Length: 353
Ligand code: NAD
Ligand code: TYD
Image (cartoon, rainbow, N blue to C red):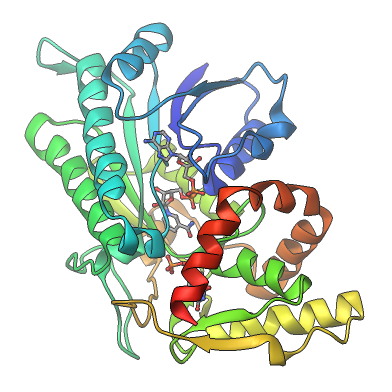
């Protein structure tokens, strides 16, 4: 039985990964270490309650004693690090926590992993550490070209700088100590359980409630949208088959300007809910994000050629599934947007409008 330490899996991508893995494999153990920040929510894991293949541990990846004790208890085969502060806007107002979790937390995990797997100068067999990173570490593209694994790192936001820094520590542990590692760098994910501070769930929620839709700048920034389940599949494939020490880019080949996404959500919800209060009049162009990267686009040739991965869900299918999910899970939306979140959001929005 393979035993995984997975971190940050009460969040968006991680919770989807738990569902994906438990559906695919009978004989695994997933130990899920999550601090339950504002972005982590046990509601996301309701569907696996009572499943003995998933063990939830509330805690911080920066906690040396706790992580060490988990290694002692479970003797993990794989570590997959999803845990992070993940929102660019928050990183602009409060960069320190991004350094703590994304950089120091990653280094702590690497140290604990090394202590457990490296004995008398020999690495235990069949182990691997996987770092879930982002295409944002490459910086911003103009109208042409794609990010390749060989593209130099050139992060702009405090978020992407912290992720790039973590990636460099992962490679340092590989190059210095011989730690078996892979890094995945994916484009923007969308799908169920995404915290509604990110573009797609935020817009779905606001459209539904006839709230203004804050589009940053001219709305022509481009993101490469990837359905979350396709991303989960890629992480599994890299964990199982990725070559030691390699980086794999994971992209949807689905580049869309932000304004296209917003108008698509408006049109879908207008038709679906037969609600004439839903129109493009809700769009409000607001001040641009500081340092806003213009375009992300991924070339996923390497992961396709080496591991046979490709994105199965087209944007047309994925966005309908996503809107359906948020319409069917309004209690979830209410719960995660209650309390401090709304205060934070109104404050952010006031500053931008
Ligand atoms: P998320 O913000 O939804 O979830 C992050 C999770 O990490 C939460 O459950 C939170 O409680 C947990 N966490 C935060 N700090 C922690 C700490 N110190 N110790 C333990 N747990 C902690 O993020 P997500 O969108 O699911 O992203 C997961 C990973 O994928 C991140 O590393 C992110 O950088 C990366 N990524 C995300 C996207 C995207 O589009 N969402 C794109 C590329 C890469
Ligand atoms: P986001 O979902 O925050 O992801 P990231 O910044 O990691 O790409 O934002 C996606 C794009 O949408 C980005 O170009 C910023 C833009 N955006 C808006 O225009 N309005 C919003 O309210 C949000 C949250 C994002």
